Length: 262
Image 1 (cartoon, one colour):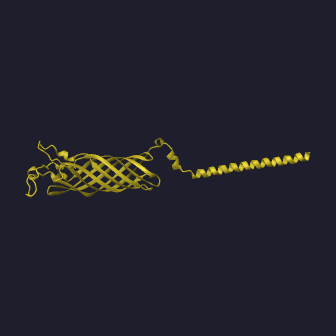
Image 2 (cartoon, one colour):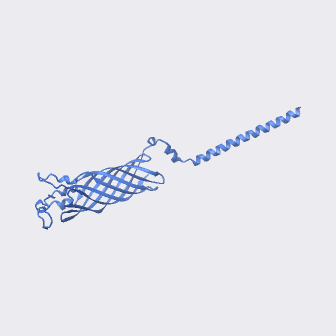
């Protein structure tokens, strides 16, 4: 009887030991599986699942260089005035305020050189001006923030002119000169263009931008700006005389590159 009990005790010890080893193996397997899942865990998915409004706001900045084409949009009086685009350039910088992962506010300061041909009846003038654009864009961003993304948006801008040849081109134009037609087949132009030198004045308007940013921070951008200011209205003080009906709005299209420090 004692021998039987002894054998049963030995069997019980081995059974308990085997069960413990099995439990240890299962625990080790669970730990290994958890480690593997942690290695495979995608941090970006975690960020996507978070409320982006609670994330820290990131501020970055950069530089940009664009080529532009600019002229004046002329309405009403288009039969006596016309404007043709010429190439110019832009150089400036910007700050980027990342409100969320897919939305940012970006103010810019851009020094500009604009050119165009401005024709009045039979006379065409090559006009140029130097100034600064200050746009504020509200941007949406789509794509992988680490591998490159598309951004686009719109906003407002204001333009200040530092120097221009427009005043020299038009300051000597007299109403009596415009009232005499040298070509009898064409109607007499009775408009007073003596105040067209004000075309170099400051103005404001709306802007749009679209671009793509590569992982290293280099961007390719296209922008469009159009003034909401009728700059022809600046010469409306014409001593009580009737003025031209022209409405003149500056516009520009630009394409270039930029670099953003992250």
